Length: 212
Image 1 (cartoon, rainbow, N blue to C red):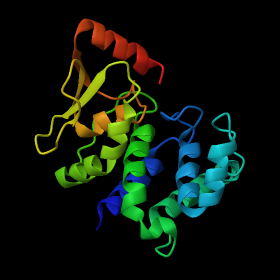
Image 2: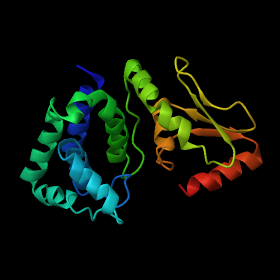
Image 3: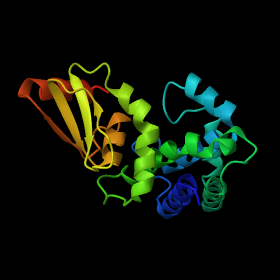
């Protein structure tokens, strides 16, 4: 079984255990909204793109709203979780490039689901999945802090993974690879990381980061 298949199964199990009306780390989205988004992204790509382009306020997506409504009953919610767990058609774009397009999406949104109501115990991911996650996230991690007021270096606590960023006076973000990924993806408050640097550098970075 591929890593994306394992993550999809685990993600679906977490949705089954969750309160559909609980908050997530995605502003304006409950668990039900997040589930609808993931399913729409895999099974109705054009509608998903339209919603992303035209929606100003999260929770008011035109097409996704119909899935949220269908998931309003216990039966409808369970059916949507089943659709997620079944995965995209292997003949679709999402199916053909499942690992490339979905692994990172699943892992980050899984934490959006888990941490929406506050801190939770960390998930234990297989070391090979972590390496694959880090590899696929690398291009995004490289770009995430390019507008930061100071140089940023990411140092995962896994010695098998390479650090990302510059060796210069700035800040060093350290922690578990998944925590660093979450921080780079905008889940600043929920990510458990350490920040090192001069007082001026860390203050400047913290002020910039709080605005993202």
